[in-house]
Structures are given as structure tokens and as C-alpha cells.
Picture (cartoon, helix red, strand yellow):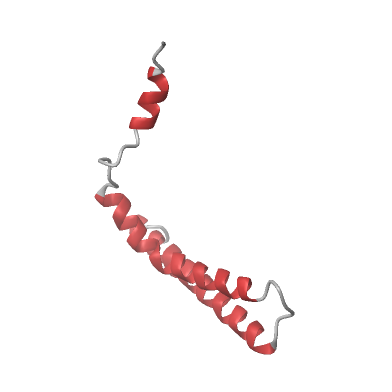
Length: 87
């Protein structure tokens, strides 16, 4: 029987003892408003997949789109301010 060492190393490289770094967790925290806004937008789209959107559905989609865009804009502005762009 032959050992498959390269596959074993690839599988164990992502063991459960490896956790995200503090920088990765901070990045997730910064992006969380965008993630949640995208989830709301996706929920609004899913709700209208099997039917013709009503006026209420269209308003919900517009609000969700605006929230997602606002969250992305805020994240972009925070990133630009942190990197010193435009100073």
C-alpha cells in the first residue's frame, strides 16, 4: 500500500486548529454591514423569484439596493480614509 503524503499535507494544512488572524477578524468586522445588506438584498430577490413583484416587493428591493450601496460606499470611504487616499 502506498501513502498519499501530498494529499495528506494538503488536507491537514487546513486543520481546525488554524484560526483566522486578528487582522482577518477585523476585516470581517469592517465588512459586516456590507455582508448583512447584501443578505437583505438577496432575501428581497428570493422573495420575488416565483411571482410577479408587487409594489411592496419593488419598494423592498429598492430599499435593500440603497442599503447595500450605502454600506459599500461607507466601507469604501473608510478604506480610503485609512489608506490616506485623497488627503
